[in-house]
Image 1 (cartoon, one colour):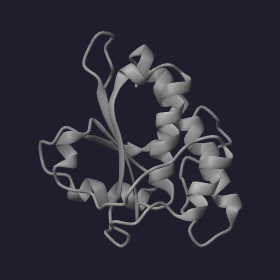
Image 2 (image 1 turned 30 degrees about the vertical axis):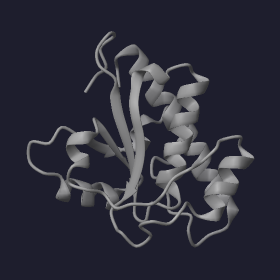
Image 3 (image 1 turned 90 degrees about the vertical axis):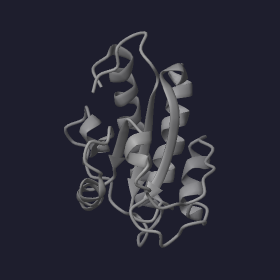
Image 4 (image 1 turned 120 degrees about the horizontal axis):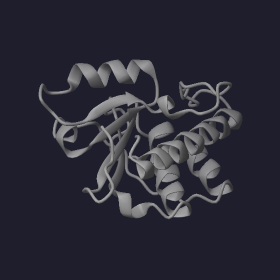
Length: 166
């Protein structure tokens, strides 16, 4: 799916397992990058959810909040599970890892509009891991590593969106 100049805005969502670590961080980082790059006019909505409902109704993990704030990025989200309607609501649904990608593809209703893919597909750094690993059981380094990946992928996606090559 490419973004034609002058066409309608697009909507993006991010998905991990529980929607408390990686995907709410991705949502916050994308929103921040769009503002920094002055490209908010290209996106109608940015959201996130999980393939599971384990943490539905919870806020982001405290380490996600700390990492975002230490990098100057505000984060505000309430966890939820993916809904079938999300597959028609969003133009892009970005999975954080292969397991969530496969789960999303399995859940996706036939004929829905969402393009489902790994967010790491938007890497321009051959040394950067395209999989955004779950930092939940690790220390703060995993969260900071996720942040660097998400910032890089967000800015690459937005740059391509602006040029019609997303």
